[in-house]
Structure formats: C-alpha cells, structure tokens
Image 1 (cartoon, one colour):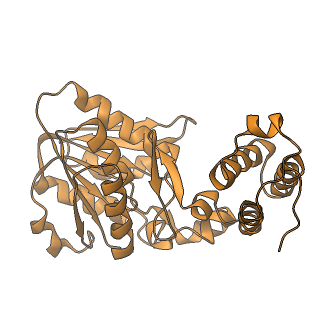
Image 2 (cartoon, rainbow, N blue to C red; image 1 turned 180 degrees about the vertical axis):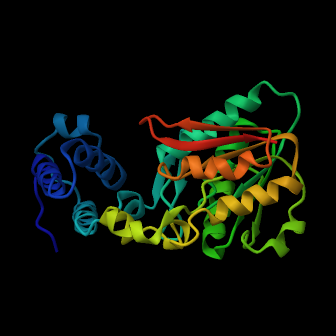
Length: 287
C-alpha cells in the first residue's frame, strides 16, 4: 500500500524519480501522460487544485506505473497505447513502438497518392501493430490493404487496432523470407515496409528500454546478412509490383546506400530520403 500524498507532491515525486533515467522534457511528457491516463488529471488541474488527495486506487495505479517505468519499461508498454499519425493504437510486447520516422514514410506515401485517381493495392510487409496500414487506409480509404507478419501475436493486436479504427484490412500470417509463400500474395501498386534491419552486433549500442522490452524478432537481423529483408523485397517486387509501382522502405541510416544499390539493378528510380533529423532513413523506389 502506498502512502497518500497531496496532488502536487505526488506529481513532483513522480517527475523527480523519472529524471533518474529520462531528460526533464521526456520525464515531464511521461508524467503528464500518466496522470491524465490514470487519474484523468491534466497539468492545469494539478495547478488549480494542488492540495487535492486523489483516490487510493488512482494513487496505487500511479505509484505502480512509476515502479515499472524505473525498470526502463517504455511508457507505451506500461499504458498499452501509443500515438501514430494522429491516432491512438494499442501496443504490447509483441510489437514495436511506432516511431516518428515511420510516420514520415507513411506521410510521403499518402502525399504521393493523394493526387492519383486509381485505388491502389498496397502490401505492408511486417505490419506489427498495424499502424502503417491503418494510417494509410484512414487517409486513402479507397486503397486495398494487405498486411502480413510472421508473428501470430502481432497480427492479433493489429486486427484489434484495425477494428478499433473501423478500417478494413486483409491480414495474413506469413513468413515473407520464405519465397514459396509469395504466389499467395498477388500483384500490388505499392509495397511499404519497416522491416528488421539492425545487425545483432549493434545490440549493445541500443537503449535498455529497447533491448529489454521490444520484440527482437522485429528489430534484429543476422550480422552476416543485414540486408536480407531488402534483398527479398527487391526480388519480390520484380514479379509482384505493377509497372510504375512504388516501394517505400525504412532502413538503417548506415546502410541506406547499400540498400539502395540492391534496387538500382532492377528498378527505374531509387531515391534515398532523409528524415527530420537529417539521417538517411527512407528509400523510395519506382518500378
């Protein structure tokens, strides 16, 4: 049982504790998110009524959340939700937490297709939480989305998210690296993917909240073949992408040029695009 504190003390303690592992700006954002989620209290409410004592149940929720966060567990997994492209989605330990860089990739696809009159068939390889497909479907409602993943657990969550956002997407459990599965997928106008691309030997460079909690299946590739997913996508697109079709990929910033070179052999144009931080993180290919 946790001792009850006045609201201002509870908030201050939470914020101070989080600064042991987060910067002040990150700790503040997380603290605000937790108090709004767990006690329906915004920072303005705390300022208006700093001496308020919240219910024992809400107090316990907040204190338990703090203990989980201090173990480096990402706030998105603690709360079971994340934000992606202006929408809230469910997340758990079976799927990656969506990143702003992936939003940029989706934004580029949506901008490119807004002016087109046709209804594109789109394949999302390694859908995870389904965030990419759902964002595309909500913004290009006439598009036909197929989303695949090797993880049964990830697909179960993706289907929940699609239902929550009233989006019709065809989900399929499929190992994309096994080429014998490709004939079941059909032909597409667009392929989009944020596949695993981090070599195992880089694991130690990553933050504890990533390596200890996010699914390694969706993060890492063998050191000897770090571009394995891109090699397969390049080969798949030759027979499964319509003429003038496009491929949108997120990639490792240090391997962007190597990745682009895989597609230069067989495709009309290959463009490396920098993200908001000036890193080479996206590749856009035209058949």
